[in-house]
Amino acid sequence: MRLRRTGFGLGIAAGLAACGILACGTLAFAILAWRPALAPGGPAEAALSPERIRAGAHLAALGACASCHTAPGGLPYAGGRPIATPYGTLYGTNITPDPETGLGRWSLAAFARALREGVDREGRHLYPAFPYTHYAGLTDADVAALYAFVMSREPVHQVSPPNALPAWLSWRPVLAGWKLLFFRPRPFAPDPGRDAAWNRGAYLAEALGHCGACHSPRNALSAEVTARAYAGGEADGWWAPPLDGASPAPLPWSEDDLVRYLSDWDPRHGGAAGPMRPVVEAHRAVPADEIRALARYVAGLYGPEPRGARRGPVDREPAGDGPALARGRAIYAGACATCHESGGGAAGGVPYTTASLGHRTTLAAPDPRNLILVLRDGIAPREHAPGPIMPAFGAVLTADQTSDLAAYLRARFSAEGPWPDLPGTVRTLMPAAPAPGARAEARP
Amino acid sequence: MREAQHADDAMISLTVNGRSHRVEAAPETPLLYVLRDDLGLDGAKFGCGLGQCGACTVVVDGRAVLSCLTPVAVLEGRAVTTVEGLGSPEAPGPLQAAFIAENAAQCGYCIAGMVMRAHALLSANPHPDEAEIRAAMALNLCRCGTHMRILAAIRRAAARRIAGAAP
Image 1: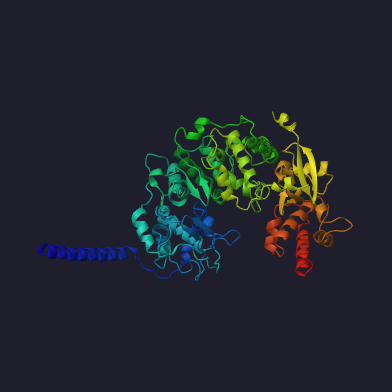
Image 2 (image 1 turned 90 degrees about the vertical axis):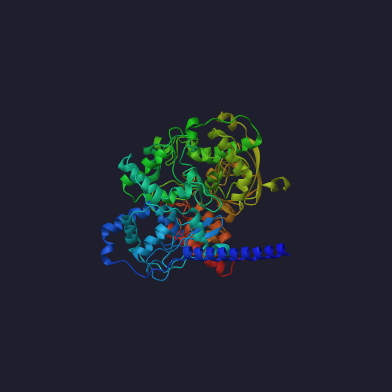
């Protein structure tokens, strides 16, 4: 009896304690999660000097702000671009100075808090698709310049579509928990043992350019795995190559190669496609010394002998004559070779081609998605400027034919083994591919 | 090595403008060469041979395709439509009639490709808006500069459809 009563008493005490902990926890979390709205404000006239706006324009280009905040075919910085995440689709916000739908009521303090702490003017936590984990390192001067640039854009009245996320993620205080786990804001710390260009490049890559947002792996909660920075990641359904010793690039990346690649096109490695292409296009507005600094830092990430460069480029007719290989070879000869065996753009061949497809990182990659996406969609011409054009083959090649071609390219132009489940990946990425021509046999 | 592969000609079944053909060709032979050299259909033109100009555009299973970069072997059992399949000089089809009415050709070299890309567009989207027309036609080049009349011809053909000629 006594024992029972004691047990009962202990139970009540434990229950009260648990309630207390829960209440304290909830209170603590509420204090942590709650962020005040900041008073509406706009730029003072003096803050928008032409020099500061120009500096901000270069910084916005290096930060590739437009690639998330401009919809395809939409007005610059007016938002609405869908951003696919493992949890659903987010839409880039309108960052033009429109008072109702953009940043028109944002003070410099509100803008700085959003960039460095991931909290909007109204006090709502922002999703980490917006890379405040990187922007936390931005200097005050650069934040002010970016603010001047953004606030001097043409205001566009345009509401972004609502994010398509599960209900529990639409509740913004959840993001305070995410920040508690993964957000370690710190200002950029230069390395005194390195030269000024390297340090500038490190700042551009780590803080403003947020290279790691795509080129580093993310964990199950979409946080960058900082211990494996630059080990390769994902961007919009594309494979983002590693920028460290795991790089499969068959030719090593020198600083000069990266200067050419990051500002235009590199004859040794080729040019950017997919989500990297708008980044490179934005760099055309950036002063050359900034690109040089970025290239110096990135070139140092690969280490002395990255994986792909140990093997070197490959171009040899694959052994064997199975029917799939023969089909792939015929498609290559009819669809690809005219341009890609022209000797390379640098040697007078078709512009924007490398001397051999064996130079392309895409074909040495552990993941076939980039190849399949480029075959399916091609590379669209750039508006009003020279640049590569590759026709899309998604309208003419079936999924099986695309698999045969991709397998042949891999066997001929890479030292790596076949891609596992290539046909499955192709079918996933080409659900609308033409059906194979099975009707021929039935016809009289 | 590659010469040896060229010797491997095969019999390939093709359906062009509703007619079945069997042609003997190396599997990598571009469709354009088969159309012009083997089937006598010279509407589709050789422009750049690199998939950059669109003069060789034909329609395969309803979608615009660059015949200069389409190996004939991938077309086994599929339906190819060329400009000859839309009508003849005596009896032009509605889209061709719209190009004639708008005087949309100068030298005419690009026009078969233009007509076929517009045909694929209007088959998939009978009432395209201006932006959709321009996006679809952006890959086909005209060195004479008749793009504005070409756009007018496509608008005319689309309006004709709205007027109730076609379902």
